[in-house]
Image (tube, rainbow, N blue to C red; front, top):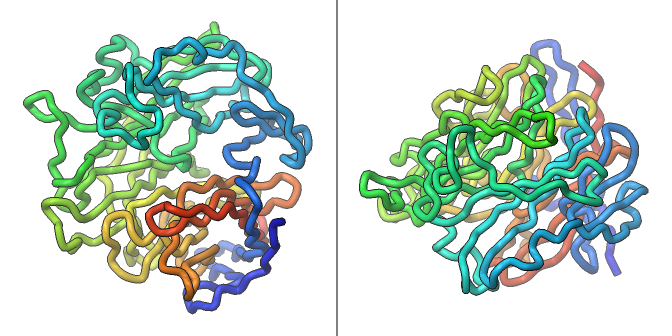
Length: 420
């Protein structure tokens, strides 16, 4: 039986509510940790999204809820595009994207065509060479899908689906679920993705000395009359391997009121070129002023007072709230991190829409390691705004060290924010 904990985390980092200091005439926002609830099993709200621009209908791959996620009915995707795939092929589940302006659902399907590959292997090395992307479109709320096709840039081929990407040499894939799709004001659909890099020898390249190395890229789709998307690709967002040893990873994107796009990414330190983890473990950001086609050189993301902060190589998410505020969720550390670790505490904070920086005074620690725990991983969660309460709901799990244990969890963050 789940237990509801109204928590005040007993550390100086974690306070039950935070009010941002008003700056530049902006009125303050208040974030409050309302609940931290251990669940008997993973919440059905994981990967759930609202089906329509208004109302409480929710959908996810294989399920439909008419009542804000309280009850669910099975909604097996039809046709079943995967039933006759050869053994070893993979079609992974990624959250659905509802394009409210057109009533279409888009399902991006990270894929590998690898005959005989053991399906139980997590993140097999061959994925870095063979990952590619497919997509499906539904016009009836996810009951049926019109097609299942590879995502290919205009003028390209399945073997060379994007500029600089070649099947069997370097993969292109989604980041974690913080890399959610976005519809821009111009009506284009953006898929935040990442592509492995290849060197002059045509083989995978890792100039930073890490196990992986990727550029962040935006795949940009424009709707056609036959319910398909015509695909383009952005200029890659490329790291300096001396400052991020694994490149730019798992982009999350938001469109700000002035039309700029903000992309926040994880970097990394460590690896062969930084065995003692001396490179600062920054979070990175880049900005586009032309709808996602071109991006600024990535730089360390900072607080609104100009100070950078330490953050492990872990997922994060930008989330637009109905109040007009923009929030970022992710891990922040007091000390320089060591690659992926530590993935705690988990914070939520406001993004200033003018400076695009993280408002330090708004930060709220959602959860962190307890004194009696050897460690905890607060990552791989799913966050959205509850339309009934306007709370930010975070569902996932508190994972033990090495992800060897899983405790399903749900957090709720209250948002009290006047309109601009």
